View 1: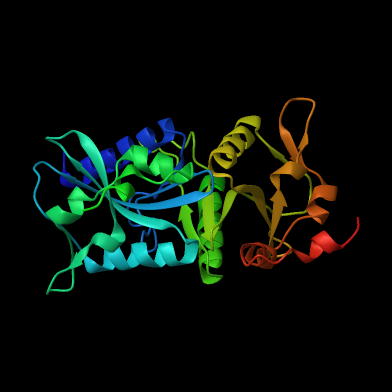
View 2: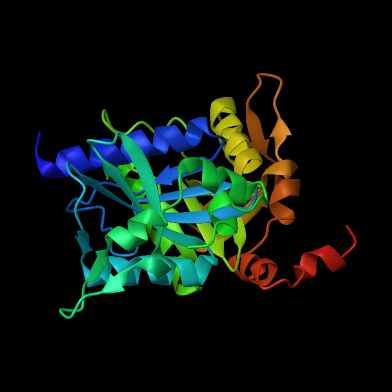
Length: 146
Length: 146
């Protein structure tokens, strides 16, 4: 399977998982000739009035993730308009678990792109945290001093 | 152009229009073999925290519109989960304008499907009404007794 197709398969997997947890979920069209994705994040998940705007990444091993500047700009613009919360959703295959890194924890690299550092990954939310946020419950991590 | 392709072209047109009005917009993937749309409405538009869940219809002439029961069920389920407002967006080609009919104004037909009546069309919102709702301004129509 190509990296691109594997990416879409991950997006579908996450969309299904979020649906099972009670979110209303919409995935963007595949980026083809006809379906321009210029303004679309990978996934938008909605639950009880909360808006989660998500860019999806998959990695085999745990190591820093770099993301193109334009993708983050796209996500930020979408969040500004919707007043949604932006996340990078990462699934590390070897852990078999999704992590949601709040966009404000990304670091800008000298080259202008963005990086998910291991420190940011430690502060990542789980899918249960997103459920709690939309239930109006503070995520547990907000009570833990770091 | 086939009816299906014309439909997607209308969805794109509406998505662009909503984007120009300041909404964050996401369109569902085209319904193909891979991209199941079972749970996806045509368009989700977000603005300042408001959630608009939209099914798109186009008609050449003004006459009642009938919509399959399963499409309305899909829209209602998406609205229940997201706490969004559901609309049928109709563009009548001869008027060259979009109308947004709140889902609660649809009538159920004896056959179990749904109908946009001419009475419902008279109460339809415009795109400016959606902007006002997301600005926290009541639509003008809510002040007009009917």
